[in-house]
Amino acid sequence: MTTADGGQAKTESTAEEMRLVLDAMPVAVAHCDAEQRYVFANQVYASRFGLTPEQVVGRSVAEVLGEELCAQIHPYTERVLAGESVQYDADADYAALGRRHVHCSCTPVRDAAGRVTGWVATVTDITERHHTEQMLERYRLLAGNAHDIVLFVRRDGRIVEANTAALAAYGYEREELLRATVFDLRDPSSGPLTADQMAEADQRGVTFETIHRRKDGSRFPVEVSSRGTDVAGERLLLSIVRDISERRRAEEALRDADRRKDEFLATLAHELRNPLAPIRNAVQILRLKGEAHGDALFARDIIDRQVQQLARLVDDLLDVSRITRGTIDLRQERAEVTAVVEQALETSRPLLDAASHRLSVSLPAEPLWVMADVTRLAQVLSNLLNNAAKYTRAGGHIHLAVESDGSDAVIRVHDDGIGIPPQMLRRIFELFAQVDTSLERAQGGLGLGLTIAQRLVEMHGGTITAASDGPGTGSELTVRLPLLPMPRESAAADGDDRRTGEPNARAELRVLVVDDNNDSADSLATWLELAGHQVRTAYDGPQALAAAEEFQPRVILLDIGMPGMSGYDVARRLREQPATRDVLLLAMTGWGQDEDRRKSREAGFDEHLVKPLDPLLLKDLLARHAT
Ligand code: ADP
Image 1 (cartoon, rainbow, N blue to C red):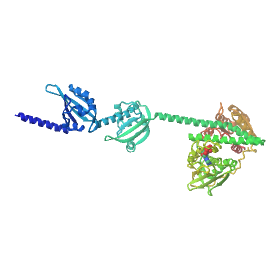
Image 2: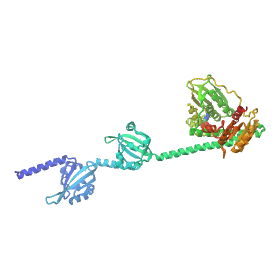
Image 3: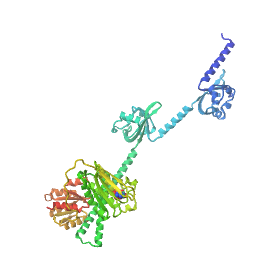
C-alpha cells in the first residue's frame, strides 16, 4: 500500500522525469495557464528566447514572446482557450536565433470538471523545410511556365518528371507521360536512340535535332539538349526539348527567298545577254566595213569595250548564280599549267595593255601537270590578272609566276598596286565583298570575281589566298593546285593564229539564222554575209522550217527561246526531215549550263553556243564545216 508521503514523492519524481524527457526533446514545449502565464517551459523553448526555463516560468506570454509575435498568435490562443486544438505556422523573431519559421501545435488543458485552465504548445522549427518548399515551389513554377519542354529521364529512358509544356506539346496526361519513355516520344523516322547516345548525354551532355511524335501521331522537329545530373541521390538526364517548327519554317522561307534571288539573278543575266548579242554583232559589222574614222571610230571602240565589259559582268552574274545553286560542272582533263596561263594572258592582255602595265611572267623549266578544266582555270587566272590591272595605277608592274613546291603547282599574281587592308584579306573572297574606296569603285565590278575564283579553285581541289602588307603596298594572290604525279607526253600545241575577230573570207556556206529578236538575227546575218556566206533569216519556228526546206542551208544557227515553237521543237523537226537531217545545227541561247547543253544535244543540236556569240568561235566552227 502506498503512503500519502510516498505517493507525493512518487508524483514529484515522475514530474522530474517528465521534465528531463521534455528538456531532451528537440521540440520547444510550453504550458501556460488561463491568464497566459507560463507554468512550464522546456530547455529548447526557453533557450530560443535566450532564457532558462526557470526565468520563463511565472512570466506572461507577452513578456517572453514580445509584442509582435504575441499579436501574431493571439487569435490562436483565443481559440485554444475556447477549447479548440489549433495548428498554425508563424514567423518568430527569436532573441537567440533570429528569424525562424515555426510550426505550432496548441492543445487546451482542462481540469477534472472539463474547464479549460490553460494550454500546452509544441513549437517545431521548420525554417529549412520551409525554404526547401519555397524553392521547390519556385522551380515548379519556373518549369511549369517555361515555353520549352523540360523532362527528367532515367538512364533506361523512363520519364520521371515533365513540365506543363511537355504535356501540352505531346498531348499526354501527366500519368501517361510518366509511364512513357523518351523512346516513345521519338519518331521512328529519326532512327533509334541508342544506349551509347544516352551514355554520351549523361557523361558529356549533348545537343541534337530530331523529330518527336505527339500522342495523336503528328510529328514536330525539336532541338534536344540533354545532360546527366544528380537529383537527391539519383542519376537522371535533364532534357530541355525545344519545338523548332517555327525556326524550320523561317529557315525554309529564307532558303526559298534565296532560291528566288538566284533564279532572278539567272533570269536577269540571261535577259541581259539577249540585247548584248546584236550590239556585239553590230560592232563587228562596223569593224569589218572599216568605214569609221575620227569620232565614229572612237565611239565604235567605246561601244566595243563597254559591251565586252558588260558581257563580263553578265558572265559573272551567271556564274555566281550557278555557284550558289551548285550547278557548275567541270570538264576536267590532264592539263599543263602553262596552257592555262596562256589562255588567261590572252584574255587579260587588252586590259593590262590599256593601263600600260608592265607584265613579267616566269614559268617553270619542267611542265607542271594538273587535273583541270582549262577554260575555268583560265577564267580564274584571268580574273586575278584583271584585278591586278584594275587595282594598280597605270604603268604598274604585274608579275605572274608559276612554280612547283613539290606537291602543288603554285601560281602567283603579284602587283604593286593599291594593296589590301589586312582585315579584308579573307573577306574579299566573300560574295559581293569589295574594299570600298572611291579608287576601286571607279573600276566597277560586282565583287563576284574572287568568290567565283575561290569556288572554282576549290572544285579543282586547290586553294586561293591573298597577301598584302596593307594599303599602298601591292598585293599577291596565290593559287595552289594539286600536281598530278605522272607527267604526260607534251600536249599537241594549238598553233592556230585565229584571234583576229574577222570572218573567214574563204569559206562559203549557206547559213540560215533563226532568232525571234530581229536585231539579233539581222546583225548576225550581216556579219556572216560580210564573211562571204550566203545567209537567210527567219524570225520564228514555222518560218525557219519553211526557209530550211526551200534554202537548203548547210548550217542553221537557231535561237532556242522563241515564242510558239521553241528552238528544241524546230531542231527535232529538222532532224526528222531527210533534207535537213545532216545540217550543222547550232543552238544560240543565253542558257549555258550543263543541263541546257544536254537538252540541246538531245533535241539534235550539234553545238551549243552561248549568247553573245563569240565571233572567233563561230568563225572556227564554220571554217571546220566549210567543205
Ligand atoms: P570586283 O573586282 O568585281 O570588285 P572581286 O571579287 O574580283 O570583285 O574582288 C573583290 C575585291 O577585292 C575588289 O573589289 C577589291 O577591293 C579587292 N581586290 C581584289 N584584287 C585586288 C588586288 N590585286 N589589289 C587590291 N585589291 C584587290
